[in-house]
Length: 274
Image (cartoon, rainbow, N blue to C red):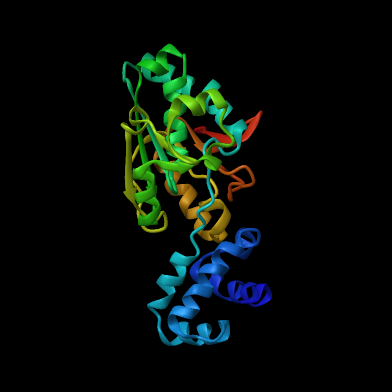
């Protein structure tokens, strides 16, 4: 399939599913390959034939929706975010829990993919020397709409390239080498992670949470109306004074946001009751 044909098809199809084309422009190759394979499976000649097929087979839209899931991730992606979480946000939340006499720290990783993000949080907590964070009972719920990705997350086996953003000393202590460039995350770092299959547009955990990570999902790929709805739902599940983490190139959709960004890391915003 030619790139131009795929672009034209995606610009036609994405809005019909509540997606926005600009979010897919740079990562369209992943989706185009999947669409090309789907055309072969269906015996269709081109994207025009696929448009006609979608018009006559409404159930196919759900399959196409699944083909549009972007699965690019790695450990400690956007290192500045993880430095701020490890040095400032997580220790502060640990102190809050200690002061309140409530040791549990609840974290939600929304759109967790193959587990790199929630496991990165687990690694930060286990390697922290902050006494309050060390004493906290950290519980991480990780959700994604792709069951295959969740199976990969539960297996916790990753190629070496997924760890290129991690400090070498942390990487070496967090993983054991299996063979060639395959690494297995050590069991203590997997112990407090719960995985669940959920599509943000249809279902969310009840919460509440002290920290929510929703990066490169809601505020990249969905149309603005959906973004606003999801932001309101995330806000409802975040405790006052809690933190929301978004992607490095994302912006929240509402001008009257209930969040204030950290001045030195604008991808991390704090819920403020105005």
